[in-house]
Length: 198
Image (cartoon, rainbow, N blue to C red; front, side):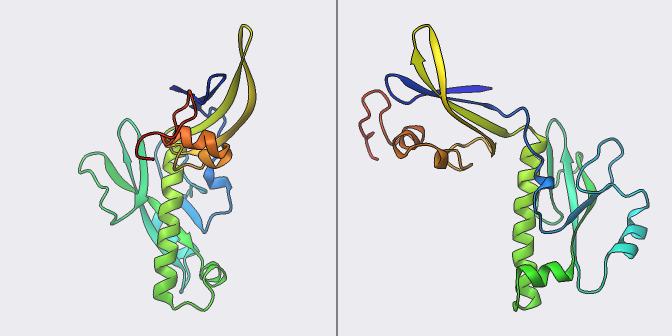
């Protein structure tokens, strides 16, 4: 999919799927995503032992271990168990998300356990949402092009935006204020006037 947005009389923004995205599981994540899947290698680790044995060997008192499920039909969705995303036919258990007690104390020093767990769950849900976007190819790049005789020259570009909405995925933060207003529909691109109601 390609999107073209006219920025002004001489420039346009081209948005396309990023075909060399970085896996968000390679980032500095809160914990470890351990997954068991018959065909594909999801997560950070794919243990050879069964889940009960892995749990016994890896989870210690004080650690936060959350169950992870997956919906797989035409796309994939990875999410925490109990978040209401289950489908009776195409959903199932995938693995665990393990956050060690030391990591909880480092990230949320001095907070009571209940607060640590709540904040950790929120972060893990965000990580899994970003990972889902990555798995489904919902990662984008843009380039600003300027009209030249016989075509277009690229004057700026950036990639690695997770999620397709440029106003929410950080893409607009990389554009000039005026260009970001055009992308969000707040400014008329041709004569650079503010749109009605902006």
